[in-house]
Image 1 (spheres, rainbow, N blue to C red):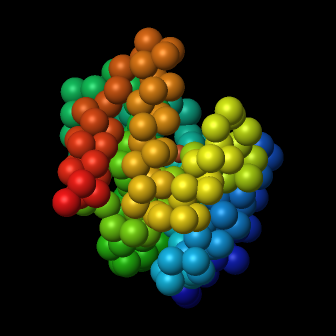
Image 2 (image 1 turned 90 degrees about the vertical axis):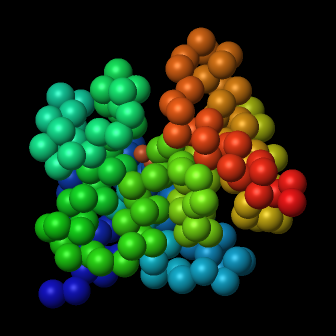
Length: 191
Ligand SMILES: [Fe+2]
Ligand SMILES: [Fe+2]
């Protein structure tokens, strides 16, 4: 069978908590608008949005065990902060259990939490829509949405800046992959 956005919307409704499902369809709606604005594949955006947090249905202990089993630990920091692993686990499951072979969709799901250097437009779209979907209401979120709608790359840079500032303010560790992503995108945009 082919796995459509409808299939994964139903799966998300079944597997996720009500709050997380609301977030998921919020990401789908906002990612869809941005995809239309920037000429990206709406079906791919919907698929990535609807599946990005699917692995959050597993406990953190299970996520860590799955990440080890599937060989998805890339940084020592991953072990200290297993909550960063759910994107990679979801991408692994999509590829191996649902035969999703579109690498861009898999990358968008895998990298939605931390980003990665040289993100594709779809990856930036999911990374940023996750942070700024309509259900989010932290101070400054409207500004981020405006920036995103105006310019996907610069909007994504602003999302990265926001996230890093939030982590600094809360005395939390910034994952090296997020720092690399930020430096890379900043460099790209200064050319
Ligand atoms: Fe997530
Ligand atoms: Fe999310």
